[in-house]
Image (cartoon, rainbow, N blue to C red):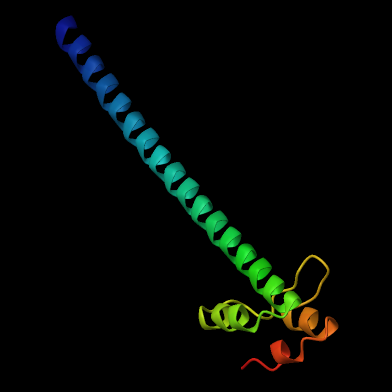
Length: 103
């Protein structure tokens, strides 16, 4: 009789441990997924900021060809730089009318 009691306790313990391990495994997978999503968002933000800096530099220096290329690639011409200016504002301030008129 005591043997059956011990076996049932062992079985209960093993089931509990299995449930705990499965829960921990699911939690780790969720944490990995969140980490991957954060890395992806950070990469997208970095890409967006780099794109903004590139298009701002092209407008600032009056490089119409690069400006057209960035716009064709989908760069955001309405993003503000660290001085709260858009690329077109920079071009206008520097007197690059040809950049401001780029379609």
